[in-house]
Amino acid sequence: MNILVLNGGSGSLKCSLYRLDGEAPPDPFPPLWHGEADWTHYEGRAELRIASTAGAAVQEQIEIGDPIDVFAPLLESLWSGPARMLVGREEIEVAGHRVVHGGAEFREATRVTPRVRAALAEMAGLAPVHNRFQVEIIEAVERILGLSALQVAVFDTAFHSALEPAAYVYPGPYEWLSSGIRRYGFHGISYQYTSRRAAQLLGRDPNSLRLIICHLGRGCSLAAIRYGRAVDTTMGFTPMEGLMMGSRSGSVDPGVLLHLIKHDGYTADHLDDVLNRQSGLKGVSGLSSDMRQIVEAKDRGHARAQLAFDIFVHRVRTHIGAMLAVLGGMDALVFTAGIGENSPAVRAAVSSAFEFLGLKLDADKNAHAAADTDIAAADATVRVLMIRTQENWEIARECFRLASADPAPTSD
Ligand code: ADP
Image (cartoon, rainbow, N blue to C red):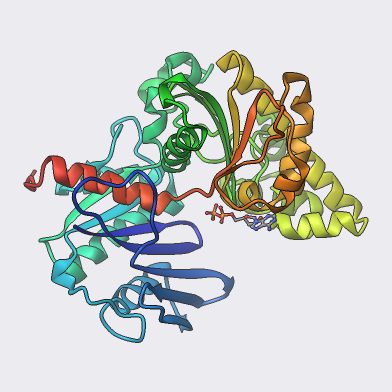
């Protein structure tokens, strides 16, 4: 089964083509073809990087008026150009989409029918940057691949649908809940993959494990997972709650927002810009939202980069503490996503707070080990794993599961 995965974010679109047949293998394998577009570096231009298993690679820049303009050139490179694959467009049976917000309605991967598409468009108010773009991609797939390809929406919120009310209801007026104002949690596709992978690496049954997973990328969150089910997470109604992030503040006292509105005349748009784009590592350091540059600058003695790093670590530690209390202990701490996978400095600083639990890193492994490794010291009583998250692979698996279980498309 040829499955095209489409993962559209706020600044990038990542597409992968997988072929899955028979039983979905437990271990991930690389896609046959992968195309990526990033439009965060230059105004009005996107950088395209395409590679196929045939070994050919393409890098180019294209002019765009809107993010969706990257889609057709990316997809068409599957059929023309040096990285083309011997897969005709009519041979792509399933297109699987990462959809950031599934609201309270979508609790698992779902076929995209006209009704589902309308519901997703309606939900764009909950995650304006992401959901609207993802609906545009669904429409573009239909235009290019036609109606015969099965389209599947895989939700970042779905993994957290197991949360209990105490974890997801906000302590505001009870009526908020019926208006959909509640905690949803995000990065669920990554948590679903990394929690399964953690159990596999530890040689344990997922139903016997208490995990705290730190997904630290451009967006950052934690999840507490008991026996395979999410019991708490740090992101909430939107991906702004919780940890400090690259350019997002994470949780701040809502009184600060009231103060800015009442005393400094802030509008909703201004607050949106400040909290989403001018805060976090970037806001505190005044330098960059990229942890690589923060670590480099702090090591050169830049005081605000040091402060940004310290706040970041402090907040990861305090939230891990909260997750520990909810879980009643942990068998393994997992680091994943851009920072979690690549920053020994962050992993070491976060982990050092938990030595009292018997959690201890092997310094050499932390500095040098490849992904999907246990980096805890041999005598540690809590394992520490570094896992490369594979969201596109997880989406492909979900599509395969859904399409194999019920291959007949519905028409509602
Ligand atoms: P996204 O959340 O968009 O999927 P990633 O998970 O790829 O992003 O994370 C991107 C972030 O990872 C970058 O903004 C950067 O801060 C961080 N990062 C990547 N490589 C390193 C590194 N070697 N050291 C520290 N941080 C890194």
